[in-house]
Length: 206
Figure (cartoon, rainbow, N blue to C red):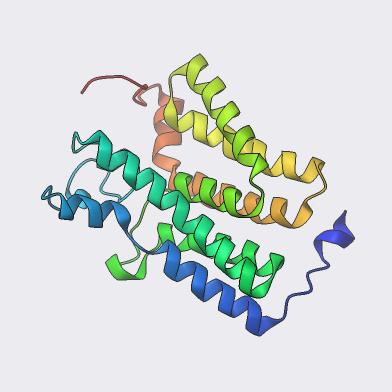
């Protein structure tokens, strides 16, 4: 398996092109764009201050939050699909990864983006679509059991690289493992609250 993991055939120019395209796709701040277009102001001024769907939901507009979630996922998928069609499978994996990075650190708004769950799912959809079903199943199981949205995402992101590795998709597994670690770092406040028993549960008011 290790030899397969190290057998990337992509050239540096193609890898760089994939990274740039992926980053540009991922750095589109849909949460900010949609809330401003709806006349709700700057979503970064409320809640956690990030541009993801969870914070958009704090505006009280569920439709905008759902649209943000969908677009944040699809921008990573689109990056992987477009680059994969033009430059090949390995380039698609790189594009998906950098779309994820672009969402977390978008150049247009001072490198302060979301936490990456939607773009994580979108990258999976672009490079290993069957894994989206597993992600959803794990998320739902943990959410039903614990009522913690953040914990559900964290557990699902832990399971995905392991499952990919077991199935022999080592390249995608390695990239998703790196994305999991980065997203865990972005969720460090949530992890702290989970450990302290102060994290909000799904459906909790206030």
